[in-house]
Image (tube, rainbow, N blue to C red):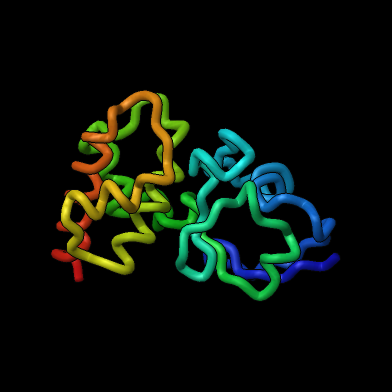
Amino acid sequence: MLVRFKLNGREIEIDARPDRRVVDLLREDLGLTGSKEGCGAGECGACSILVDGVSKLSCLMLAAQLEGRTITTVEGLSAGEELHPIQQAFVNRGAVQCGFCSPGMVIAAMDLLQRNPNPERGEIRRALSGNLCRCTGYQKIVDAVEAAAGEMRAEA
């Protein structure tokens, strides 16, 4: 099946089995390894991507579902070498340890901050609740999202 979609600002046309999982298409066929497969069952959030601006689990999506959509992966948030404010806040606040969950956390944060540029800490925690982290204890991640929100409001 020929699938056409926009990926990180580029028009993509790829021949893929309609039942191919999006996480596999991204990682294996398109070389975008930011989205991680942690559980393969929609439980951990490591494979999160933005689909038309909304966070979705790429391990639960099929290639056919990409047709005509706009997809943003964690790689698509940065502007060349310049990190997105959310990504930079994760670095600055020490919100990454092993880094496996970071792409999904960053995508979940982006989804939240697009909808609510000034979330309270409880809202941040709820927005991140579908993403599992085994290293940080979440405090630094919440701090990073809060800092990114402030930076993004200042830039706007």
